[in-house]
Image (cartoon, rainbow, N blue to C red):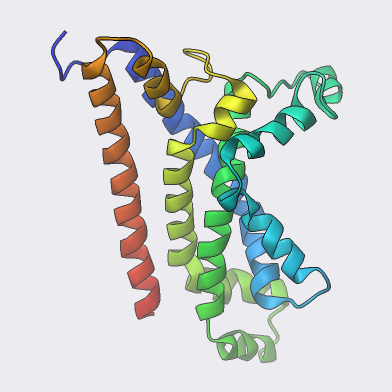
Length: 228
């Protein structure tokens, strides 16, 4: 096999990584918008506590973040039996990998959207309100278009984070080839096997290309948001 030939295991890991990252962002984005809005625009008891909880996955070791997921959503966890009765299994499945990645990406998505919200001139929203627009219409037709670059930047950087997630994922869903083995966990597995330098190099190159491209796009969008 030549150095540039991608094997089936690598393709499976790439496909699963992309799927996990897309689902993780789709799961996180609506909640992140609501939480970012609350943090940017509302003052309430527990504001600092909510802010700390949102950003906790950024500073905790990822395996520590993954363990509570196992305790809560595992087959014998708090909600495991209920989910199993509904035909839903998260632990040791690709859906669980997406959930773990979503938890890890969530703080970065919230942060980008919150910065975009704080950059919006409130007089624009007030003007729409004085013309009779309801708060929902003001958000949909004034605020949302203005924060769109920040929202997309948050989604992109969250995608990059979810793509490279390892610790929480391997703790919650293990490293099952074809089911939960993403690029990060595949690299970890292949590193344990002597003579697999070419495969490791290919997967690291794929990870670098995808992550660098996502971060570059995020930076372009952030600059666009600042110029506005």
